[in-house]
Image (cartoon, rainbow, N blue to C red; front, side):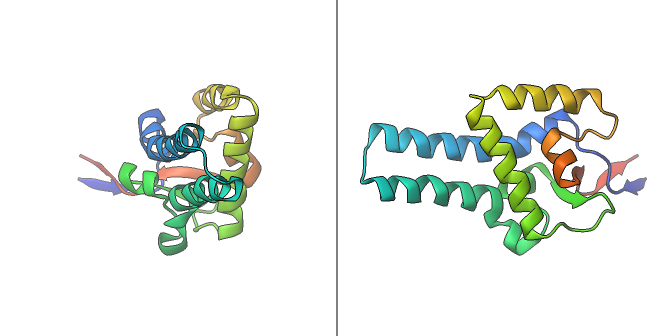
Length: 140
């Protein structure tokens, strides 16, 4: 049995890590649509949910959001060191901003780019010089 580190996360692991983040942000948007509050409370709900689920745990673990922790994947720089919070923040802001501005079209493009590359990096990984890898892969 060998333990391999830094293997690129495949589609299933990437979706498993993205799912909880997407669900939390989508549910916070549904909450403010169907239960209108004062505008600053709505902004606080959506931005707070975004930071809690996409960047919140990264403050503690340095490489994993809540979804990535569940999927047993992590974000690393290209030299296999933990990225700084500014890099992770830029990566997540780029991913979610492009996703919402294109009504989800960016996620389709990211999947196509991800699927055609051997290193399994998406456009937001390419721009921010990051990669998503399996935390520890056991190969028997």
